[in-house]
Image (spheres, rainbow, N blue to C red):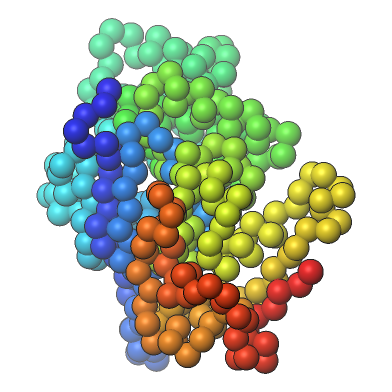
Length: 344
Ligand SMILES: Nc1ncnc2c1ncn2[C@@H]1O[C@H](COP(=O)(O)OP(=O)(O)O)[C@@H](O)[C@H]1O
Ligand SMILES: [Mg+2]
């Protein structure tokens, strides 16, 4: 149903800083895992969140659910700021907000049967009207597991089936919003499509809104209505899925996309690949200015000092780069000297 507010979730300047160290031999350091993210997630959409390992995707997803505590900013859900709700009130809210994890085995208690795993949240939220087993078996059927398996343990299932158990557990409380954190990354390629199809079907049947986290751009492309690209704790580009692939504006996004193999061998043979120099810098001491400047082939002096804002460059297409409107963003002399490389 369309309401006045189209957004289910609104993040405003969300920050998650982790304090690490601070023992006898080491000084305490701050990891800026999520650093000022302002982002809306619309009702009923799948928002894809992509970026290299360590850029803060999982932390962002967990912070929305308060599975990790935000250290700054706001998380609006239905007009309420979850980031500042008292703990008990947040526990009640969590019925609406669920998470599916990358490694279904690690996230399922090995000593509990499937029935116990799926019924736990139903009991926690007092949702078992009538038969608990019946409700659990319905959920199992919904995610494509046989009702007969209700007394089995996680180790008796395949990876794909375990992910189905994790999905059933998330669905057990009738959530509105699901953070799916790399839900297919640990699965065999042959199983990945099945789980993606399941997630798509469930979204349509149950009016779900997804934040779909992945470093696999193909998966994100398949599922997402819009895609947000994250780099070192910040969102650097945001656009409808088709636009981000057809017309990526940020050199970082271009590099991520150019790293995805194309199934057509002819296109694959000639496709332009952008190789970024070096690794992602540490989020403990992120580069000043634009965080990407140390790897960007187009970086100029100003990029070292100016923090670029995420601005709308084309309708619904946002990017954070001070050079984006330059007519011909020449590859800077600095860059040619070794900051980055563009290969044909
Ligand atoms: N509990 C934690 N304590 C300290 N640092 C953490 C913790 N969780 C994640 N980090 C750090 O925060 C950064 C972002 O991590 P994460 O959100 O897991 O990234 P991603 O999911 O994109 O791989 C990384 O540098 C990671 O090492
Ligand atoms: Mg992660």
